[in-house]
Amino acid sequence: MNVKTFIDRPLLSMVISVIIVALGVIALTSLPVERYPDIAPPAINVWASYPGASAETVLKSVVTPLEEAINGVDGMTYMKSSASNGSGSITVFFEQGANADLAAVNVQNRVIQAQAQLPAEVLQIGVSTEKQQPGQLRIIALESPNGTYDENFLSNYFYNNLRPAILRIKGVGKVEVWGSQYALRIWLKPDVMARYKLMPSDISAVLAEQNIEASVGALGQNSDNVFQYVLRYTGRKTEVSEFENLVIASLPTGEELHLKDVADIELGQSDYDYANSINSHPGVMGSVHQVAGSNATKINLAIDKLLDELSQKLPKDVKIVTFDNTNDFLFASIREVIITLLIAMVLVLVVVFLFLQDFRATLIPALGILVSLIGTFAFMKVAGFSVNLLTLFALVLVIGTVVDDSIVVVEAVKANFDAGYKSAYKAAVDAMKGLSVTLFTTTLVFMVIFIPVSFMGGTTGIFFKQFGLTMAVAVGISFINALTLAPAMCALILKPSSVETCHGASLQSRVRIAYTTAFNALLGHYLNVLKRIFKRKKLVAVSVVAALALVVLLFKVIPTGFVPNEDVGTLFVEITAPSGTMGLSDTSSKAPVGISLWNPTEKMVAVSISTAMQRILRR
Image 1 (spheres, one colour):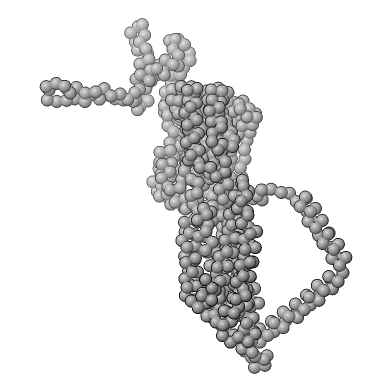
Image 2 (cartoon, helix red, strand yellow):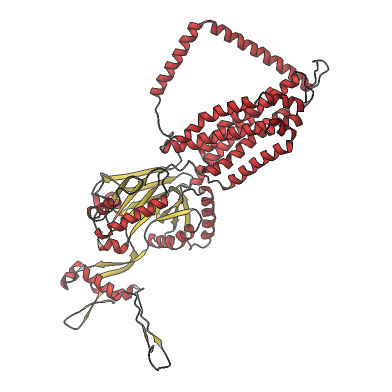
């Protein structure tokens, strides 16, 4: 199709640009918003619990059999494991781009093969296999400022009320509570147990026999009676007193030995691995993780709305506190980038206006910028990209390039006006005859520079793939705009400037003449300086060599890194201790036992440390 077709049919050119913009706007409303692209390789987490076992026992009887079975699963790159008192976990990492769902199925099949080698207690609780969630959205806490409720109550309330509601939000993949639910705790008395010659297995057997759900059948099913009775059984015990009265054995004296005689029974926590406090008050914290590819911004906004609703139903002296909300930094970063984007657009248009000296001529590059940038969002949606700092930064940088094609078209039409053309239509048609190939060549050269970036592999490739392709597509759309909308707009709104002398001319013409005169004088001085410099060839050569040497020296001196260091406003303090210290993990040289989080916006300190760490601090 000839470019003249778009000049003859300006409505067609406008419709093409409107469609590009409409697709971009629609895509923008559904694009995921995140800080950086998802660069983490797919990972599957396998977790098993072995209550009462030491870290060394967990390592030998649980982690090792699972590692041997999982090793070599399709697409796996490496795995790491850890064992602590009572539990062990294995994280299996896969190649970049692997299907996480298929990887989870393959790992689960390997786990099933290893179950025959696992202890019965582990199989009874179960071995969980789940996809590792890619991003932590925020940390939420329940606090009792006046100490009305203890940590056990708050933890149970978090599990039963907040956690299910948050999990129902679309895009939330996991809610992890750093606390324990209510559980019946049976603290055995060793001296009393020894007196009656009892073992812990005897107590377990009694619980298995007397604390069960059973189907006891019915009466009168096969009889001539009119009524049929379904037998009912009380089922599992629900009160502490019911457990206290369980019969352990009959003594020779005819008395019954009850469970309360050999143990202290209470309603406590399922485990005591963590002790939480917020501002020195009882509290429980938890983290919310998102599903891969979801919109972090929308999820956080939905969580905010949900927490506002739940806050109205909280018990007295209980409030919800939010720590480390990713939206705070995300919005601040994106806001700064958007402001930079707007400033760049304004500066580009101001410079264009100063050189073109015509508001109508400036309007054409302005429309070209909008069409190119907004239309790029449609490609980002198709390519699976997200609105992140890299893609927005690419749009900021490409503004100066997407405006070039429209400026070239406007300048060519203006040159024809200066050559004596009186018809804008004729000037636009003749200008595009020699520009189509030129515009295509310059656009192709630019795209050839950035498109090969998409073939890079690994984590670096993911980063620069979105950056490079976003710039390349924006320039490609600007080329389409320069062949369709720009020449059509030139033919419609541009007018040849009238030849006027400085005397008797309008104020605008006087300003244009003065500006042109000053610019030509400055350009003449610049060219004279260049001529004098290049006459001294030896000095130029020495200067070039010195500049290259300086660049090489700086390249070696300047520190390098994958991404620049940044301060997100949150301080993380990790305390470590030697292996085997007071119940810590025996499988690593250093074991993290405490984490402190400080959020300057909330002015609060949340601390979550293990009971082992508490013992260390007391000493």
